[in-house]
Length: 92
Image 1 (cartoon, rainbow, N blue to C red):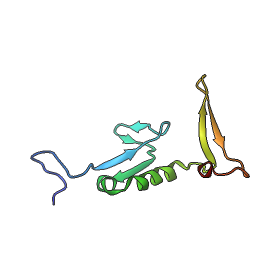
Image 2 (image 1 turned 180 degrees about the horizontal axis):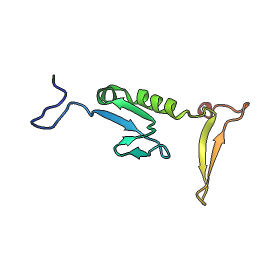
Image 3 (image 1 turned 90 degrees about the vertical axis):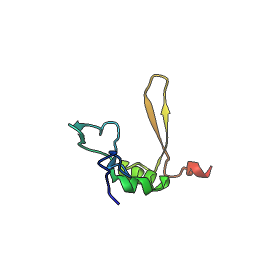
Image 4 (image 1 turned 60 degrees about the vertical axis):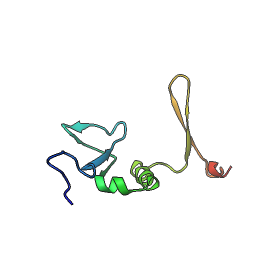
C-alpha cells in the first residue's frame, strides 16, 4: 500500500499530529518549536482516546494533587490543591 496517491493527493493517514499547549505554541515558519506531543498520523489514528489523553496528561506534567480550578468573575484563577490529609475528590 502506498502512503500517498499522487493522482488524488490523498493519504490513508495524516503525516503527523502535533498537539500544542497555550504558551508553548511558538512556530518557526511551519514547525512548532516546543510542541507538547507529536505523533505519527497512523499512531494517532489507532491510539484509543484514553491512551491519547494519558499521553497528553504525562506530557503536561500535571500535578495529581490538583483537583480543580476556580475561575473568579474578575478573570483570575485559583488552582485547588488537595492537602496531604484530604480525600481524593473522585472518592467522595
